[in-house]
Image (cartoon, rainbow, N blue to C red):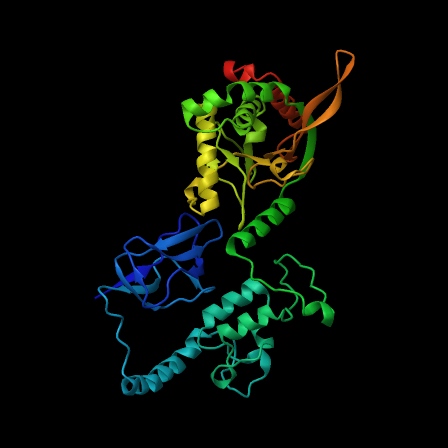
Length: 425
């Protein structure tokens, strides 16, 4: 008896996933709930576990292919028996029938791609048995199927033909009016081409690229800067970090202080916590703070929900948990939705200053940077202080310059006098 391996429900607004890799091969023994295959969506990477113990049977969907929720990926065969293979004679008899069935269905599947006559001109050549898949690849890549040599029956273009053409950088037609124009890639010199490696972008990376570009095209983005003296926060952290970790079971970092400071500033300047919806402004009377986390597969932004109701210890625990999940690829889609404002820390990579891009549809994002000792004037004397540049990128359609500057000043004031965070001042 076989148990199907199904694509799970992927979450709100996620309609498909790409097979990242299979961890097992057909015939391998698997335990119940053991990870079998990795799926990549446009938001997260997730693993599908074995629904039962047994042996992995036939794999129906290979690496790199796209699947929808509920699709069958393969099967688990109970016991030690592997799935029985069809007898050669039976398979030979069934092959022509399958080919005939596919040939009968091809005209319907490829409707809209022109004449099915093999002698038809290239622009009317049918696109193969897997018409929807070819059409989908054409939409995503911009590669025109009519310009691709077909290896299928009667010259039809198959999914494999399209993937090969995309990998070789097949020329694409001029983009439709509604599509955003892209600069064509100049051909590489022969000596350089042999040293290049072409890798398909993951779903997550494609989404990051699209969302960042959409944010630039949609919002009237502007960045304002300030700097903050981190002496007080660093002294408090140094004094209490051991007691804090012993009591709360998590390290005392800087992010808890920054999150609390941001929430106070958002309460003073609510426009930074708002978004545009058509001709309306939507003011959020709650504070779901996104914390950008870098992973080997790209940037993800888990959300600390209702962060204003949490203590600094509660925020640090949440962020620590998200960091571990992000590194292990265990973040759920729900944990990355609904943010009202984002904090990103380029300082951990050594960044001195940056202009972060908005996490649409949010109207503000705060960039933290590295702490370095710089000469500053205090009470008429030049002193070396641990300073950090802060950057607030904001949507100028919603937030005025005065509001943006006021926001950063509030953050600066809270961090330079962290007692304000404890006393809610």
